[in-house]
Length: 465
Ligand SMILES: Cc1ncc(COP(=O)(O)O)c(C=O)c1O
Image 1 (cartoon, protein in one colour):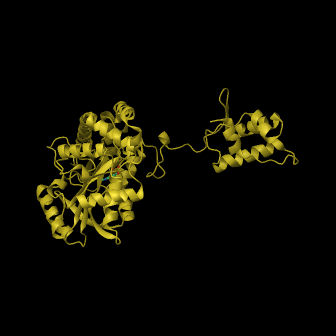
Image 2 (tube, rainbow, N blue to C red):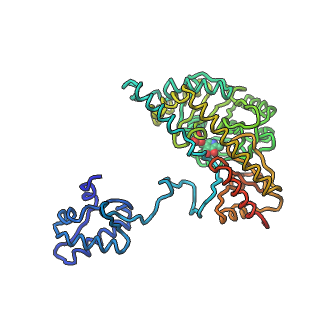
Image 3 (tube, rainbow, N blue to C red):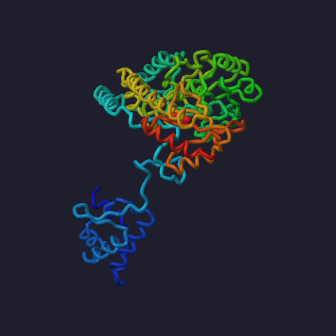
């Protein structure tokens, strides 16, 4: 940044007739730093420049700067000038901590929801972006189709037919900014006339609670057992729409059984309702044959929602929804009247990334990596916490671990954190139906030896509780 920019931002006001000029300058800067108007790291103008701007001698500014360096508000280094000290260090990596409260030091992060971000295929993504920018005509940089650029819709439809056995033509597919936006759009359409009851699995991802409510849904919890959502209980609710995670129920890890799948689509037909299928981590299956999506059983009654958040990175905000044609068209129109669609360069890059085979390669590599981590975690649990019952090992990037009898879930979470191990309890995800004390352990982000150490510390935390 140019020094002149900073001069105009400084807005230092002094009274030249009042005397004590250095103190005045120091006081003005101190106030600006304390209030955050001058943020940590900002470079201040050279003393000569500021003095000229203020109409004072350079000595006045030098004295003010020296005073503030002594007080710790400024940092002065040979060659890099004078900068505002970092009084409020940001979250690591500059990330805005959206979900964490005042966080104790975390050495082993087993919280769920984020994949191994270090596995993002930077080089292959860059190659895709390069290729796109080289080949893209100028016209393609205008507003794209609000439902998604045709190339990406075609690639995604083919991918979902191949990998998820979905029944989908490109016209039924709308590109979204992740599952989150897909849910918002679909629920928004269903709740046009006012809030609707939406059945949700209990327990369920707490991250979506606020989103569902904001979209117009009143959550109606339905319990989950070893076969997935209990459709008999669903029938007792007034809901005509349900949101499920059939590939790998979040958080219990149950795969919806064939019997329940059939019951669920039968229920949807009976009530003239809709099923929202959140396919959030379906690509990661380890020991079992791939389970096709629910959508193929009833394309007229199921909306399939997915994204690249787990396979690439949540920060890309790229996803899709597959809906029956009239609803897909309504979703496309909804994007036209809300945000005019997703960024076109990113969409073309993803289309190119899939077409080149890089997406399949990424998935193969991730499956290998995550399988090794899952094995390390299950092995360590068997060794250090033999009384725990582990579920959901066949798929996904988290395990559901029922604590040995007599253990207090919240106390375990707290004691683990005291040892630097961040884990999530299941109680906050339960809405109406009780269940045993349990933890969800995300294993995507830690290498094997660190997972083993984390479980050893976790076992220490549970001992005597
Ligand atoms: C179960 C579940 N579904 C959906 C989402 C949102 O995913 P996306 O990044 O695709 O919007 C999350 C986010 O953590 C999740 O946990």
